[in-house]
Image 1 (cartoon, rainbow, N blue to C red):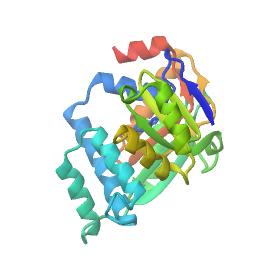
Image 2: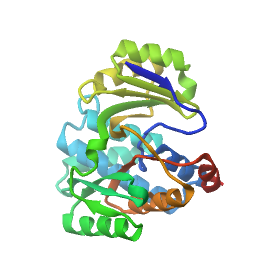
Image 3: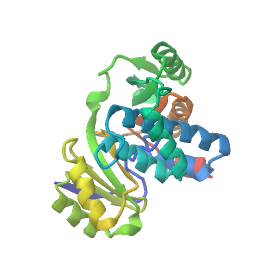
Length: 265
């Protein structure tokens, strides 16, 4: 197992709630959530819950993807009634049919970007995503163009307060995890696709419910960008994340501490 404690001056976790890049996520969280932003986020979370329940069993204990979707919703304080309603919608005749699509492209500075979407209109979403990339100075590429720079892995995330770095490391090793990162933002335990469910179950028994347990695209390496490019990249991810059909955005860049501080103010 590879283990490390992340550089505390630069968040390196790849927890992918909606933005996919921790520094960007921290910036957005510090800005606060307006009602309109929260409403849109809840709609995206509900869509993922419904699709997950429709693809498998409506029981999160028997459906890992649904379990992950519910955890993501709880992490954003989505009301239980909303979650239950989204699950029930999957078994109703009025549930929309959504296609899962992955877009890949390059942002400013040649940064690799992966976009995951759930859409009921492929042509509309593809056109919209292409336009967002172009407006930001990037370009949409073919599927497979950048995904080889990422690993498809599972992640189980906990708040920093639930355990020390050493305790989390020891528990992760016992559970069969591949990698652990601990910093002030929390603990991220990485797993293979196959072991995610078992590792998450073992860690939950020890530390309680995680704030995240899902499959993500983890960058193999990150690119440090200057502040001018960094601001353009944040705008790109913000614009992608703002699209109704976009569920997750992943990128392999790293912002400077100064820019993070500036944009978090």
